[in-house]
Image (cartoon, rainbow, N blue to C red; front, side, top):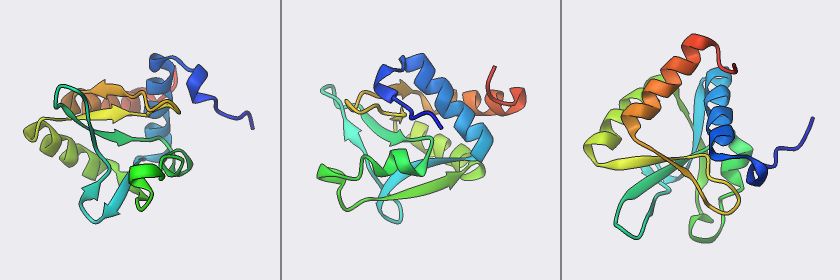
Length: 126
């Protein structure tokens, strides 16, 4: 199997990879310190983000530094859709599939839920 080099992928390629993985596996991966306490970060303007990854291994690769005590945790699609509603109410954006340089794709939770639903309807990869 070819190794995934996420730093060579464009944002669009990483986002499509994430959506395809969600469609195939019917879950996303987050880092969690304890139940309900997920890894988050904030940009210079005070906007909060919660990162999500397509696989357990990719999520685990971020379990270092400030997040060294965090464990990878899957989230199924039903919970994901409910969670997106909560994130929108809390004005938290999704940081979709950060690369090795911690650059993530900022996505509004409503848009993310819609993109996941559309990807599932179309069967994933184009």
